[in-house]
Image (cartoon, rainbow, N blue to C red; front, side, top):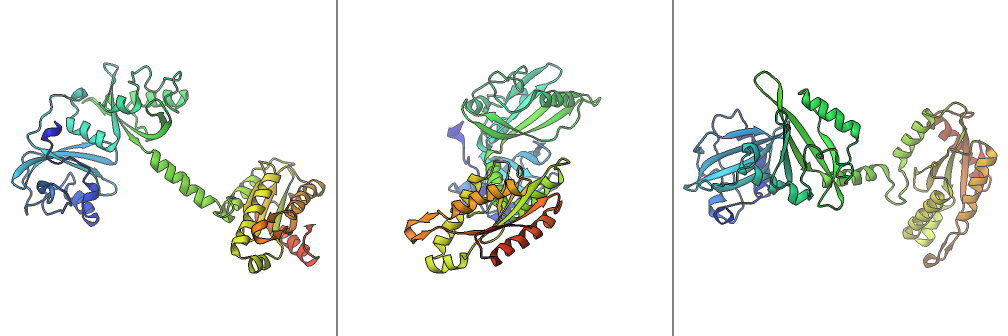
Length: 406
């Protein structure tokens, strides 16, 4: 088959970006006539202009199939550059954009039929886009998957172990989730997209999205379940990275101003009756002079070292964040009295006095700390912060390098 392929490639990136939505609009299911020109930057002359003629001549009715609630597969044959070409494309219906496009010689045939009559075009498309399909025949109680399944996952599922192979731990779904999914599918009820991790190639787990749709007979009874499995591992990793950026201070790695406030507010709101905690606000003394005398690189390193010491000295359940240039906030969840909080905060004050940066000849920094107590002096973040901040400025006025309780 490969020898007869005229042009087989993911052409999405070869189409002018501004034309992709236009092409998807012309190929929508309700369009009566597909026409116009879309330029493609390809190596094959037959594919440089996909829509070469003013009016595209279709050599057969386009076959349209919904792969999921969002992706539409369309197959058909077109006259292009004086020769018939068979096309397979996927359109994101919600975004109105072309997702994937493949061109083949129209004469190409394949004797290797996909399970249950699934088109070889679809098999080819799934291989190109790293997607996999499965089909569960409810009447026969049999399961089939796309040809590329085993090469990717290295296990051939059966009904008994598709989502129940706990011994080999091929996936991340719980038994309760599996039972609920099977029950809904057998009743023909819609199942929302499922994100799960699957073992890939017998090695590491990757994240996939599973979209399941029940196919019903003329009486409205579910007879088959069609599933599309998409690799979303890269998207999940990027989303995790973006969430970290949104929540994390990029210099120190601590929670940023917005995230630490959110976490502290939630902790205070959910605190059990009788729980006592301490909110501490810490500010490095004379930080501007450090920047002026030793440079901003030294100042940044001082902030990083301070953050590392704070995180190391406080308990894992304590919440620590950077809320300003040289200002930090800590919620001590297991130190609800002045004596308990004072002992912990004195440790950090003394530790900072021994910080050393040989490259900048900087030895030791000091900090001023202010504290307020939950619930005696406030039950919200704002109430506690205002009082702790006022206490911190009192420490500054008293000569700095000290801890003051409101």
